[in-house]
Length: 512
Image (tube, rainbow, N blue to C red; front, side, top):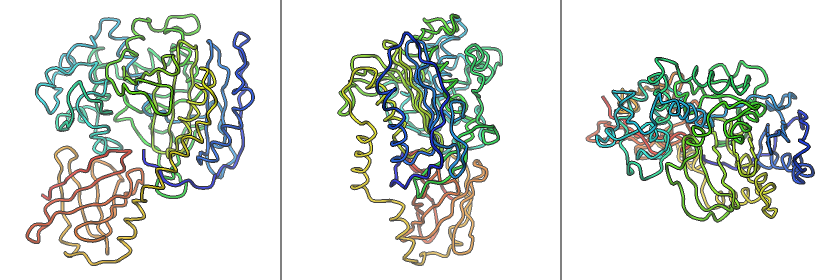
């Protein structure tokens, strides 16, 4: 995710705590008892995080379950252990666990070809289409680049079946089953296997009935729709493109199996206890260990090289969860990134340790630094301030990288005249994967309207050559250059791109 410069902290309230009795069998951890609160308050101020919630599970007991800061900047209501956050891609392990359960019950086979369950499923490459399995869908090795296709699908009105259908139009740039490339659309396809294998039970219903209800996760929701109307929610913020500001809540429901869930640290503490007790919860076997273990098996190598920063030597991906060593212990985790909210859920079964951190600023690394700090404290690492370490890396990167938004603004400020009348750029443009966009003239600007993304527009301000600055109405998509190609005085194409957080590569639209 792109980072911008830090801004002064806007926190308006202090600590809100829900008290949890510490287990008598778990010795006190000095970082937890002596330093946690001050470390978090300091980190939130330095990283400009309005609100944060954390849960720590150790040896079967919840030893920390707290909220810090405020739900909404300028309002006094504090974050507590029941404050809801969007957990985004932490949804993926719920999807992987659901499919592992079906595999254990012989209702599907993770290594069966996808076309057995979704007969019309295709990928761009015909060989991959024939070979791709259910396991492949959740392993991020289909040959796509990370986030490929997400500009088309994210915040769109495309239904899941149409998302899955359009995957055949996504041309891979990497090798099938060899190279790692994080794919949200593939998890959408994996979720569609559930109704196909269960006689029509939706992903939402299956996850609710088979995971959330048995674990008593009564405050966790499978839908992000209506999040803003729920009580006790953390509002979403970003300072990627300027001072810390509210951003619209995402609605991930058309891509639900990859990112739609909403939860709090109270419920995630239950999820962690389930993970740490080999699929048991409150003495009951909710999921057979053989099925749960399949979610953790390594399907894709992300890295096999020693980290220069952390005591890790490998990173792999299973079914919605990453795995690595950490100071000699096997660690599993996943992050989640929604607009304005980022999170981490992590567990180390060998140490009986589980951690979840939820935050409401998407332009910071403190949610990860806190996770590593807690891992260090429990797994015997010498103290290093992980927040200060990450902040130093960020500042070093900022000092060598120019501000792209400022550079675009400088080009617009020259007030050059476009080489063609603005009316020459007006028209409908088409991209095979994305579909249609419409460009109209609005005074001295051009306006891009995007039918598949209701409410999303982009204002085009002329810069120079055949380039305009595109400012999207939802700043999650960014402030980016738009490049037209003109041949013989006629506009032929326009290239649009969005924030790398959404998708890295540009899209070329051909004029109709």
